[in-house]
Length: 131
Image: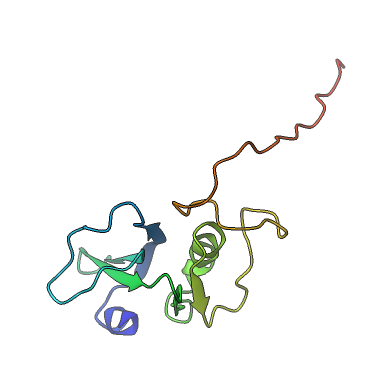
C-alpha cells in the first residue's frame, strides 16, 4: 500500500509512530476496520502536489508486527526503531531493528499503557571542578 503512495508522488515520509490504545478502545475508525490495541501511523507528504496523506494500520496485541517501509522510504529507519523500542511493534524486514533510546538490556517497552510505573534511578556525571 505504501509503495502505491510513493508511485502517486508522495516523496516524503514525514513521520511514522506507534500508538497504544489500551485505555481508549472506542476510537473512531472507518467502516469495516476493526480496532486493535496498537496502531502504526504513517504521515506522507507530496511536495510537488502540495498534499498530505495519513495511513493508519491496526496492529493486534497477539502479534504486534507490520511490514517495514524502509525499502520505500529509507528515512524511516530511526522512526521504526523508536516504535519498536518504546511500544514493541516489530517491523518485519527492517535491516537493524534494535533499541535506539533504551539500553539494550532494558526489559519491556516503556510507552505501553500497561508498563509498570516505577522509580528509575538517574545517574549523573560528576560536574567538572572550577578551572
